[in-house]
Image 1: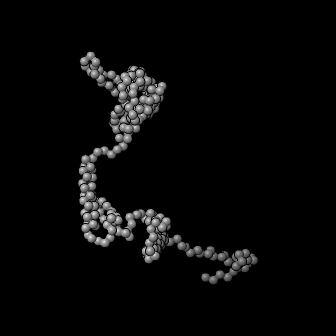
Image 2: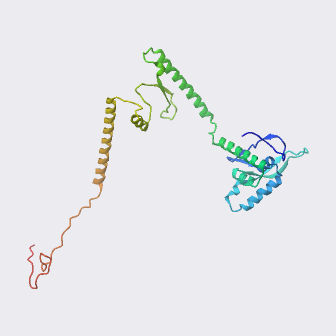
Image 3: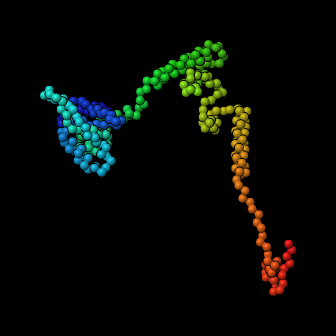
Length: 277
């Protein structure tokens, strides 16, 4: 964001808020707010303390941290210390919410841009000299591999047009986790570097046109893979079924009393059905 010129409430100099990082959080101070918004610092302190009292039961108390501002003594004596507050983005927004006017709006936008700029810097990866050195080393090795591969392709005297050759640059690690020397490999005319999902789409959209024999070989390989997977699933199901405890039981019919007939009705008095054991 372009620098903004202070209005009549402050010195007419070109400036913009320069925030700082405190405990990993982008912050500004009540001193800066008073300076850029053209307000008395004691009035800014009073406004912050009112907010703190109103937020006494709120977690937003962490948005403001009491601190001390040390400045030079205009009389040349000992430095002057004065109370101040450090605030994060939310604290600033709560405080600046009460500032009105065209000039105040311009400075609100300037502070928001400063917060965005600093927070974006925090998101960048930390500078790691070891990683930077490794990157330079691998880049140099990769460049050497590419140079050698291209040189061999041109100097070999092959009939193929080397200007249309494609190369695949690959990086890897050994068993100890150390990066290996990058490799530059020629990608042949009949070779593709793609994912399985993309391969299916390429074939469906006719982006690649394999021969009948190649398609048949691909279909056969896929069918064989599906068949093997089905056999594995059946074997697992059979193993699981054989390991389950047996639940079969033989139902035994209850014996029919002698005074009950085969039709289930009671026999006449004094008569019994013959029962052989």
